[in-house]
Length: 317
Image (tube, rainbow, N blue to C red):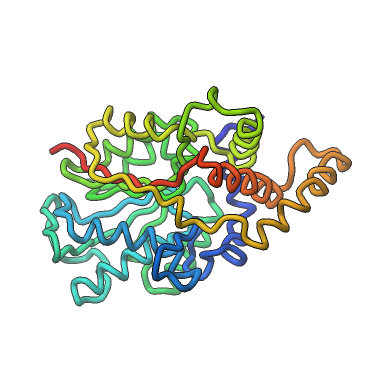
């Protein structure tokens, strides 16, 4: 049996190009769901809603270090978005990190200048593809993508003090969520900001009915959701590592569920599962896993068994 990290790596190695090519936010290099809040008019705007919310928070906060770390960064789409936004905020081109605030200096609110962006992903395919995109956009010296496991201390050793940690639909995959929180908080300089946007259970699994429980198990197994936990436990894990909650926003009402393509996927899933059975394979192809887990995910979100939330913490100084 594969280790959880290997399963997640394989899943994204096989699916990432398809996510970018066919996904809702592929035009923004986003491998996360779009938020269709009032005023949003395009898939790209929807994909950038959470990164924009993150920028709004970070650009008005006094960060203790001019560095941002994205854990589970995909191909670096969120980091590219933030790098451009911070460059526009200062009226300068995006910095390559060769000049600016000294190490350990505070980045003042309303005039923040982030000098370096770091991203960590378990997928070698995402690192390779992301680095290609960064070179094409002239951001290769501003954003560094690393192949690593955010449950391992060695992943964090080469990093400088971090002013903000981001995790956008990535903590879901952690096989050791408590360790991931410990390492993320440990990387943060005192006073730093931690932002996590992900799916969270509204109640403990033992209280679910049989239908919801079946969908939950399918979602976890097909989307490799080893870190899925309740909203309350997520808050507790943050508190245990010295993070003070700043805001807690439920974004579930702004998700687009059961789009025509989603309904089609749900209709053909029995056939796709049957093909796996008759072929003798132990598991479905990665793209079928995505459709299968995604179908259960939408039903769980619709029933509010799961909520999609954006949490913001500040590390105690």
